Length: 390
Ligand SMILES: *Cc1c(COP(=O)(O)O)cnc(C)c1O
Image (cartoon, rainbow, N blue to C red; front, top):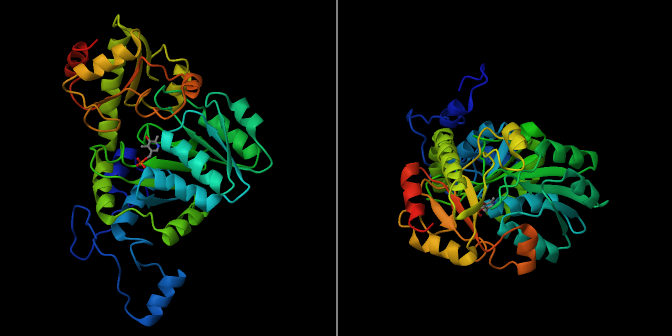
């Protein structure tokens, strides 16, 4: 690409990072090769020391993976990125690269379940402590800081209640207190929200969700400055939870339609959320694009769309929620999200099933709550599907 312009997201999504081989292929090539050949011993040595750029071995780097990293970094407005085998291995690599025994994390309370497990169970084994605070209250983040706090970690909007954390305000607290802020941008993707421009230091992705967007592969990434990505890369290079070339190729093609898909997800989700608000069986709808959302103004400022996740509370509790989930015929009964196909979940008994009833109550996850990841079907068909069980 010619870099004399500041290209828009739609352009970067189809063009950024591509380098054609000697064959001049138009579509991005898939390099299925575990290792790469040097011209001579001196070149091999220079590549191993890093004195000369070039590929060595696909645990370190691979041309297709590098293309995905460069394209995603361009979309997030980051200097560089490293890709990982899954979203969870991105979070693990971030922690292994930046934390040591004795360090402390301040994290938002409504994190993805496996992220809580990683912090509270696995990192705890190695002497890293974590405090959970309400995502919506920057003063609580400030109050939770200890002398050994190194990392602030948040997700916004949160899952499943779509609480919005003020990225700029929490980044200010992190930097004033000597910590870095990492934001899991999985729910918005760079098409709707760019945390680095708001002051975050690192962005985390589960590329499994909207970046693939069609439910095919697992993948993840960490995006940020070269200085902050280097330790994350060194951990990956040693330990190996790197992204496969094939998955990188699928994700590169996924990025090409990200902007179009996110717009369609947002339009469908907003229409469905408004319709749900008018249904007598529905007590409350959680969607950042609704005027009734408690942080509507912040969401409008921070995101360019409400996203594809809509949650709602049924007056009839768990019986009503299970009845609805059992009666739909179009929507998929699965906890995955960010797919072209709409999915429907009961968070209380699935994604949050292992959390104690007290913790669920504290997090606001009630028995009547249903979460929908709104796909790309026609919204009237989704409404008709829900009417079978509402
Ligand atoms: C799915 C998800 C993850 C984990 O990603 P995997 O690709 O499943 O490992 C992390 N954060 C959020 C918000 C997610 O939805």
